Length: 310
Image (cartoon, rainbow, N blue to C red; front, side):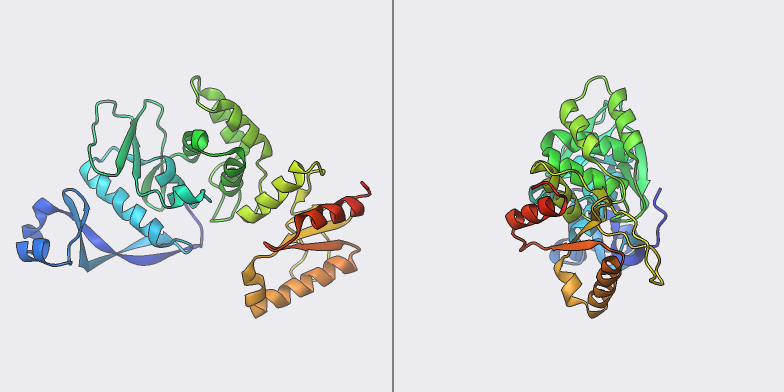
């Protein structure tokens, strides 16, 4: 399922069942009196002195690595479980609200309706409507089903950010399409937050590069302005070909670019930004820069004036 250049090999501690320690040459001293083999889940430990290389997204942080370790530990105990809900969303690399990013629970699901899992900070959802997938060799619930499972706990805005990431290339190739998501929602007879899901799906747009772009687009719509195009194409003489600003209004030749702090801290990126902006202006476009310090009241007034709405 995952086939993209944005991954690398990283070393992880080897996981093992505590009952196999002696066979692996790990003495009781190491198990109980040192920090070499801490517990991942009851009955499963990791050996910090024996490492295994595993594929990992380049963007993955310590939270992602910990989720992947605990998921593999859970599979050692229950080979039919998949990552579910917030755990699956984090493994997919979706932009989650702060409370979900730090949620310590390991969320699992299974289609084995008889399975019981009673472990601290582990939740299990049993359902006959489980579609398995794999993401970098990790067993996860299929993306569309994960999106549906988190919908009751997210606002429409947060769902749209997740959806834009899932159908775009923010963290690798698209994981699903809007049509796939729409069909999956339509197939489910009993569904919590159906209205919220449909409203969010209507606002999801392919091609979005970051959650900040989604926030900017949704803000524009929320204040009654026309929805801009995501990455409109602008012809240029640059060697890299057409320019695609974050958002734009083709008829008014107005482009909006959201700039994070790294645009200013990277000399290479800064030079590319200047070159790109000059090329857009040479093509007759007006470029508005947006940062986290932007006064949005003034920005709204500028957009209205440039669109001829005032």
